[in-house]
Length: 219
Ligand code: 2AM
Image 1 (cartoon, helix red, strand yellow):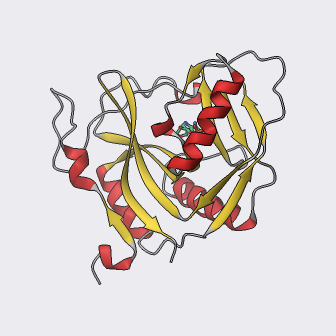
Image 2 (cartoon, helix red, strand yellow):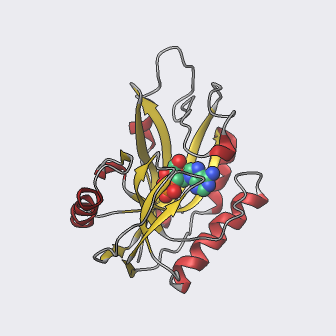
């Protein structure tokens, strides 16, 4: 059975056109990513490597993006506003992934099963170390927890990012927020979740771009 027949949709060709000048790479390989979002990764991003910064995430529909934009407006200038096109719910951050690791990863997750569920985000969260303010929820539904745990365990077992903090579903609204006094009670937003994406994070002309490489749909 071919890869696409098994439920995963591959979106590689779009990626290869955006290799920055001066960067060599075979088709499908993109050569660098150097954002600095999290302190524990400082030092590794500023090198050019034949690896990509990848993560598994759930996309946010256009209607939910609209609701989240209202939350950003409601909260005001807390920090750098995350553009709506970059909204996502991270399941597992993988860190820098080589081409070989990426191929093996996609192979292992051919038959990834995506739960279909509604997730209500009902509280603002501030993660001071990461400097982000998010809309999130607690506790996480069992099906989502299980999926995040599987992806995270697999990543750690294969030499990729090892999450120490527990999974806490959230969509990041602001970055660069290190001090905060109090956050109000939010109006809840319900996300309809039915798709997982393997995402690549990179910069183009200084702009942070998240591009889906593979998509899996709930059946
Ligand atoms: P978040 O905004 O949902 O927290 C791509 O870099 C995405 O991976 C980020 O948007 C962030 O998701 C998540 N991420 C980046 N570095 C991370 C880290 N060290 N630990 C956990 N998640 C991280």
